[in-house]
Amino acid sequence: MQKVSDSGTVIFRGDFMDGVTGTLDLRPEQLSVGYADSSHATKSRPLDVMVITSEAPPIVSGISTCVARLAGGLEERGHRVRVLSSAEIPRFALGELRLSSFVAYWPRIARELRDYDVVNIHGPAPTMSDAFLRLSAMLPRYSRPAIVYTHHSPIDIRGARRASAGYNKLHDSLALRADRIVASSQHYASQYRRRYGPQVAAIPWGVDVRSGPPSRLKAPTDPLNVLFVGQMRPYKGVETLLAAVAGQPWVKLTLVGSGTELGSYVRLGTRLATNARFVGRLSDEELQRQYEASDVIVLPSVTRAEAFGLVLLEGMASGCVPVASDLPGVRDVAGSTGLLVPPGKPRALRDALRELWRDGDRLEKLQEDSWLAAQALSWERCVASYENVLVDAVRSRYARLHGVAALPEVDQRERG
Image (spheres, rainbow, N blue to C red):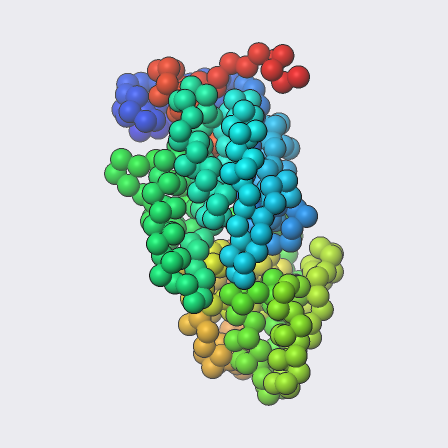
């Protein structure tokens, strides 16, 4: 049980982290973040955090954006963060499968781990996150930092569903070796909860909160402005989207993004005579203008490789109604203020879009609801929640090793 007193003291009674029992009184000056409200926290010392991920800038993807905002937010809070990604550890693409050379770099990484309090490993990333979780478990217990695993989405490759399922089962067993697990939705968080497993937190990704939704003066005869933002890859469902809007003069579709399939999608759009416009990759400012000019943000993904849909949240923050495939994780973002459709069904997607075009009052109401829903999901909230988990993991591991829930002492000479 956890209680915050009037003085700000955080008191834990009963079963404390990882089997430590009793009553523990942590004064604010001892905490690097408050468990109830991090805005009232007083930092004792910053954490040394290593983030290991397959995708980070300059790669353009939802995962890359989330990692960049998380790392930047932690640095703004005073922590020292190093991001280790495929920018340093090369990876190779085999169709939709990405394989990493992580194992070749493991001896160097293992030596560096002693300089960090916690590792935040993102996955599943075949031959990267699985390799780290397996190899780190073999290190001496006093020479490895706390590990927080962030789960994005299961591997789900079309044409290789059985192999994907087998791999996901293996990776899940490795992930349960972490000290803490974080997922971006309640659905995926619930899949990792075990009676004797690590603590699991559901922390949605964030968005830059806008002061108010842009005003949209839309006449009943105006076309519905639909926006797609994403990589041009098979699992994103662009073929489904183009088929849904083919021959529909009441919809104007703008597609933002690049990727291996861009050329074939442009040709398909021309062949289907769609009212679609491919604009390629845009700057942040240009993308924001597209969000503000659109009525709907659409995400027609066809596999569970789409775990959250950050672009849905970005569109909602600008007053767009989310229309998305009914997939785990994605439905947590879009389901309450938007429309969900079966994956890979062009007619169902067309009907959902037509419904919004025909009912202007409902469209306007859902736009306002979507904007309001996004206000609660700021990046500040996301980073603060992650900070809580990271600090908790470090203190918990130290308590398990030494019986004291504290941040390990660091000789300043170690920091160079």
